[in-house]
Length: 505
Ligand SMILES: Cc1ncc(COP(=O)(O)O)c(C=O)c1O
Image 1 (cartoon, protein in one colour):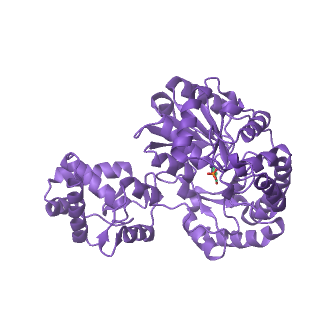
Image 2 (tube, protein in one colour; image 1 turned 90 degrees about the horizontal axis):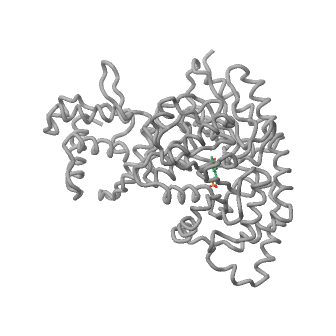
Image 3 (cartoon, rainbow, N blue to C red; image 1 turned 30 degrees about the vertical axis):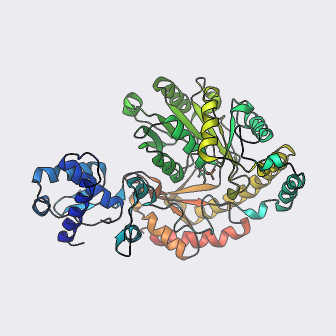
């Protein structure tokens, strides 16, 4: 983009801010909003150099101080990067959105304007869609989160569902009132108290359409627009989106080998309203939160009177070591909301999950669930109840655990044999994925590896994409659940060769 064109674009953006009807903020704030909006909307793409502050001030007919104030603010927030001696550029990695490629930015800009008539998304719309979780995501070997449908007992599932359709129980065609199908809530409560040490009565279990809805409901009912939410950094993109959609200000908190690791300042000065964590298997690094950290987090939440959302998405697949009880099970102050899903143990398209809610919040959550989403699918919930109570779920989990462990072992063995010390494998004790970490000194471009892998029919996720702001580590997230053990070696070899090609000698 030529400097002059950029100034013209900013003039238009300024006019937009000035005519949107709201009370006008000061000029430096208007320029800040205009420039930030244009970056988020992809109208100014990653890597573009800004004109000098002197030129911008002249073109926009503003004082240089006004321009510098806006530019400094955007630089401090990470939207712009100042390079000594060469000028100021739009950052490659945007705060809260992660890396923004010029191509993606251009695509966003093109979709924003059709036939010359701009059809604007909201600022929130831009924020939520600037980076897509599903685009360039193919279901092929190593796709994280994908499971092997071949293992699912389809005929049995058909039979259980057919039983309820044949029963002609018309009540099952209604909306799902009162938090879902009661026998399913009871079955889940029994399962959770036994296997995850969750402190739960059946009334506390609400059936949702999965983690995404559980998070959305919790964020909407417990937080207000602009409140701060702590998220792990790196963080699951689905959670990030749900919290941003609720208008929360995300504060990225580092992760170490013991899970979410707030700094001394965070512990002392942090004022989050909600904390989102994956303590059983940090997504994506895979660490298990230590007991000490769990206690510290619970104590902090009690002092601050904030909520903890525990996302326990894949702990059914634990391959070794002693399982930790849930965070919720250690909580003496009823401040943890515990969330689970059937996406991994059944199949993702089932869209059923559950949220365990503290007792005093139940009336509000029941109302919220019903009024905001009008839940249903009682036939499906009834069939799932039988699937659990007749023991099929436990049988399936046991079978999947054996299959996935063999796939993980094979993949880890091949990687170690081929790449040895050049990579570290993290988070392989449980779940459906492992995280391959590169050494800092190798300066590996994990995005480039992901693109090259895609061209060869493999989907791997670059770790850098999961960070808010500047990535702290480079690596790859590899899902192993999708590839049968006997097909792991050829695919692993292909991937390792590709990675080797990217590593310096
Ligand atoms: C961290 C995490 N939580 C939850 C889920 C599942 O979400 P849902 O229940 O909405 O399918 C996933 C899926 O990959 C995940 O990675």
